[in-house]
Amino acid sequence: MTDTQIRYVRPPLARADLLREAAYIDGAWVTADTTLEVTNPATGVAIGTVPMMGAAEAERAVAAASAAFPAWKAKSAKERATILKRWYALMEQHGDDLATLMTAEQGKPLAEARGEVSYAAAFLEWFAEEARRINGLTIPGHAADKRLVVVQEPVGVVAAITPWNFPAAMITRKVGPALAAGCTVVLKPAELTPYSALALAVLAEEAGVPKGVLNIITGDAPAIGEVLTTDPRVAKFTFTGSTPVGKLLAAKCAGTVKRVSLELGGNAPFIVFDDADLDKAVAGVIASKFRNTGQTCVCANRIYVQDGIYDAFAERLAAAVKKLVVGDGLAGETQQGPLIDGRARDKVIAHVEDAVARGAHLVTGGHSLPGAGSFFEPTVLTAVPTDALLCREETFGPVAGLVRFTTEAEVIALANDTSAGLAAYLFTRDLSRTWRVGEALQYGMVGINTGLISTEVAPFGGVKQSGIGREGSVYGIRDYVDTKTLCFEIEAG
Ligand SMILES: NC(=O)C1=CN([C@@H]2O[C@H](COP(=O)(O)OP(=O)(O)OC[C@H]3O[C@@H](n4cnc5c(N)ncnc54)[C@H](OP(=O)(O)O)[C@@H]3O)[C@@H](O)[C@H]2O)C=CC1
Ligand SMILES: O=C(O)CCCC(=O)O
Image (cartoon, rainbow, N blue to C red; front, side, top):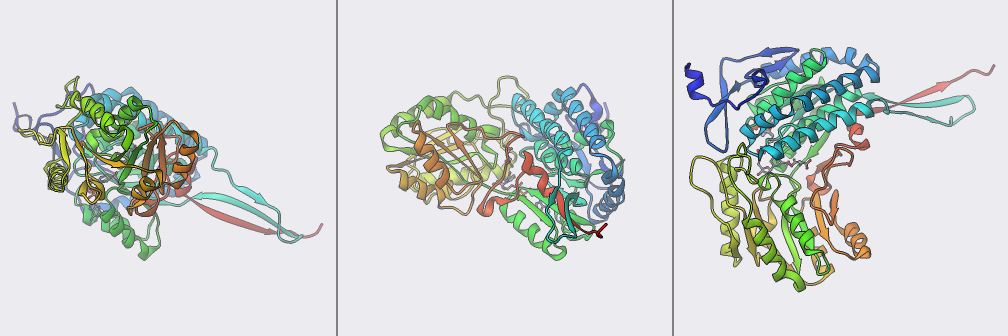
């Protein structure tokens, strides 16, 4: 056995070459003198390394994307769509391997990882279809000799920075529309989950994505980010991650007036009215709050339950949460994997301790689990005060905090009392109330009698400080095109 085999525990893959320990620049796999280790959060054991790159490699990647842009833009929409469809098919074909890799580096249960692979692939399929519908407009001329035509052109080189919680879907949701529109891309994935991104590059290459069209670099986030947000060759910057980092990077983009899309943190209210179907509402909380062990920006963060059903709801929710199986995501029965790292677990602990110190009651869970993995028990708290951290900040963990409310007006005010505006949920059988409350909630997305709102066909994005722009759907391509007006003057015959 070699040193590497002893030190690193590789996930079992049918195609071992999907695990790449190199970055992908200008169609070549590139290593670096220094490396970063990638760790399995369920075991605390390293999987392998990726190159520690910085500004120089970021500049090379931008140069490659810039050089590749004219030829990629010049391809017909159908040619680009054909390549994207092949990439989609390869993702599905190797879906089990991609899921295993994702679970190993990110921790989510294997079934959830397989679901994310299909969700991620669906963005490639969807935007392959959209590539051929980036239609323009003709406008009646403003004078007898004038003709106006509007065309949509690719913005150019796109720089993308993505997070660890959805290591594949956050990539294809950006790269799919970018490539469909005719843009080229430089992507920096999260350092905690780079292998899913690099495996996608392996499949993109096999699908026929030409060299330079997609570049993936790993390493020093601030150094790479500095280039991606300031280099004048980059036309657009797209980011999913925390609100403070998003704000910082968006500010840097101002210097070269880049187009900016941001998908930032949420603080989702989940409202259960007296007339709700309780079983459905409990299932909704499990789906929304406990998806990816509570680590999504659309996870329910504050659960408002109306007086009349509060106690019954709390009891049923606690019973459902107690049944959740916690463990290594690679084990078949696991429903809740580890948190991404010790820092994430410390944040969850702090939120629970803060709520309890302010008078909340711990109904189930509430503790981290011993061992090398960053596990935290699925938790339910009742009587959470609205000034608790659990209500004020994104917890990003498996903690359901219940708050009692009495009137519709009161809960709308509570729900909107935040600078975030990504997702909200409401459960009621009253049709008029679904419209009233749905319209009153200041959020980019509202789930009505459902805890799952994500699909490639619907626009995803937030209002207020949760972001700018929309991903997925027919709207998702708009962030990757510039609108150009052609104004013709014609001579009389
Ligand atoms: N909207 C969402 O979906 C997400 C929200 N979050 C929220 O953020 C909290 C913290 O998570 P965290 O992982 O720290 O999120 P970050 O915002 O720090 O990370 C997201 C991405 O930004 C990169 N990044 C971080 N700092 C810089 C920088 N200065 N310049 C360029 N790129 C940078 C990261 O790189 P690297 O990994 O290499 O450091 C990663 O690729 C979570 O608890 C959650 O509340 C987190 C992830 C996703
Ligand atoms: O947490 C995120 O950043 C994105 C949520 C995943 C999704 O539902 O699309």
